[in-house]
Length: 131
Image 1 (cartoon, helix red, strand yellow):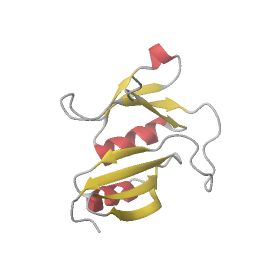
Image 2 (cartoon, helix red, strand yellow):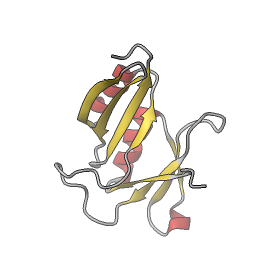
Image 3 (cartoon, helix red, strand yellow):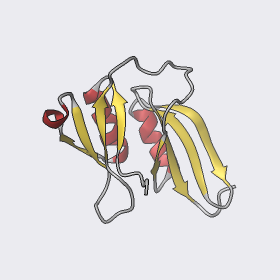
Image 4 (cartoon, rainbow, N blue to C red):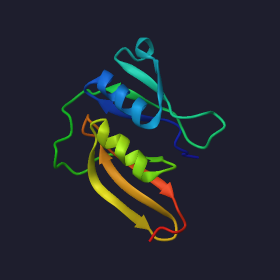
């Protein structure tokens, strides 16, 4: 079975990335640099009993994505309780809009953003009234 169990976000500025994801989503980090042999911080994204997975911030090993480059990997999407409040936190902490908020009719609100490292991610607020 190929269930997703871990993610890595490649970053150029580890402190900036930890601050962004900590402030916006409340993630905490564990220093796993010794095990990885490079700057590598485990990201705790929620409580063990909550649906979801944990991952890591990993030191980028090449150039950052170009501003107009298409996504060439996976986009992580975070579940949020309040889309508008989450978007405000993203923008206040240096993120930018990649694809504005849109409705998944009868299911949710969805949108995509770039973190200060140039990585694209999504946010998703379930809402049966979205249209």
